[in-house]
Image (cartoon, rainbow, N blue to C red):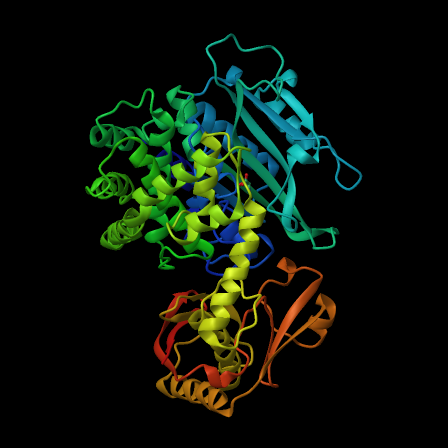
Length: 583
Ligand code: SER
């Protein structure tokens, strides 16, 4: 049995319910592009809301981290990875949590106790030294010199700056054939962290104030790829059973061996896997020049460039074969992969064809530019030309240049990029004045439409309707809201009519900056108050709607066209979803 199944079975036996992995693009959290940790979709429940599955949960969660994309290509980094997690929402606390982890590692996985060591929180002025956890570890047989007390930078966990948090205890495994040292040294790289148990009993607000949460929770996370590598006794994650078939497929396609071509093969494998999971996500992300779509584009283009480095024929179906090999491994666990297999394959092919048209010429242009460089610097104009004419994401230019020890003027590029965006937007719409951060005009209209819909639902359905999420593409909008019943045809009609009435009335959309406190006092609507900075932007549409929002929006509702509700359905328990278009 593999690690995922062993883990889930173990925690189910301990009274946990398995919850499905949330989508990689968070549905209810506009502040991040991707889910970066297993606990992220559980934040409302860690904050005190009751979870429909109860108080003991476990899962494997799809995560994507894009903060160190440049590191991909080494032995251990991945853009997409799976995190195994178990949670107690005000149920068990340190004793059971630590005992379960210990039992799973030493009994289910048969890891010898001598190869384990742990860190615990040493305490600070706010929170006491975690002797409770240390004593539990000792009672289970972990010797005193295998326990290290570390400061908050190591043993206090929080996702970002604010939110649910708490001291944690991290479990390390001795990955080496050397004799296990008597004393645990967390700086000795032979000790690898494999599991993190966070005791989430606090909330840190945006001002840094720490208060107790209503309940004491446990949040644990174990990176699947890393633990599989540990268990299989290799120090290169790409040599484990997780990747073997995929690397093998790339070896066959390229006619080259992994040995000697590790970096490119790892990048191709990792990036296509992430592109598969983004494209198969219910959010229907497509390659574009903004947000998640831009990450998707970068990943595919970088994978293609590395395929070219391996002399793979780009026009062949190589990316289809690799993606299929990846999908075959995951369909058992993620239904969306099978359901959306063709969509994924089409996304990859289309983006590849788009890039392939200019790739060859772009690479020649890059060589021409760099052959003339004398000061080891590639200027902003050339970087922009590679982007604009040849579709080279700036990060790709930087990577190519770095291989020649050439530095790229990225700041200069970004400035030029911004000017260009503003110019083309002003030209195409005739009315937008910059600051619109790359959203296209249609998406901006949909964005304003979500505010109108939110307001209309409150009037027609129930004043307690709240937005639970939204997702916009240039083809449609999706809006999730709290509501305990299926909307009747009459309710849907009335909502649609009201939104269209406001559109026809031509109401101005205005923007104001104010302190978060004033915004709340003024009754502005907002999804995740704790996520916002102290000074916020509030968008008002006449006196119909007032919401905390980063924008951008149209200037007047008469720009929207006709609003049509296409579908109203259940999203999750107590949450309904409307799909609508503007015509
Ligand atoms: N939230 C913690 C982490 O991501 C434990 O799951 O490490």
